[in-house]
Length: 148
Figure (cartoon, rainbow, N blue to C red):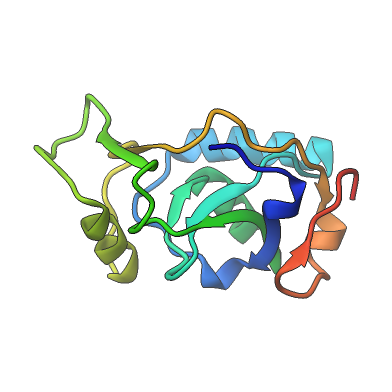
């Protein structure tokens, strides 16, 4: 599955829900790059029904750190989409995991350790550039246009 620019929406940061922790050093490096680029160049992927982040926990943490109102996201129907494969990273302490367990964790007050889950969704996400200024000002669900 691949997406185009029309599939990217700017959603409220507070609507999104993490299901695993981040690596602080990775987030700091991404924060530096985001400031250098003055924007986001890759959307997150999240569950349309719950806001569960499937890909982009570090980008989410950067948005929170910067106090952004919105963030670019591709929303999918996670639980019903059989093309979305869920795996555990080799270093994970878990024996198995289900999509429902990922959603349940996101809806709880707990988080899995960093790099617990891996979602095989798409090798292609549309290239975008959404400026930090626009992410602090836009209304929800506004389509993203390349170069904004």
